[in-house]
Length: 169
Image (cartoon, rainbow, N blue to C red; front, side, top):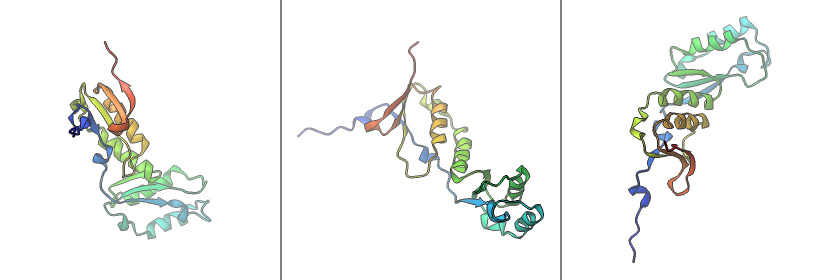
């Protein structure tokens, strides 16, 4: 019987797995429509009273996305004020959804990686993540890798899709 050889394990292919950089921590979303009159109208005095009476400590060490689920027109100061209340407790606050929050976290993390270790190497950006990795993170990682990698693929080694190949000079 012929020995089975794992060609992927023996190749020079480098795997870049965004799940390896997924920040641990609880992510929550606050919908400010709960503090608007009928979910649509912001009355400043009432809004400020709701914020004053809200238990902000429940967001201790959490990542928080602040958004409005209705089509209400919200003045910028309202979202900023929510952020002011969250600042002493939350690890990070963003305007948007949980996906926007994850994208923001990845933007910070990916900007600090030393990509020179991928210099002149074929790289596969691993797909099929079990964690909620936003598409923006994949695009950003590929943009960071491109100046260094000889080639970039997406997916799994057995079924990778070519994305970039360094031009021959």
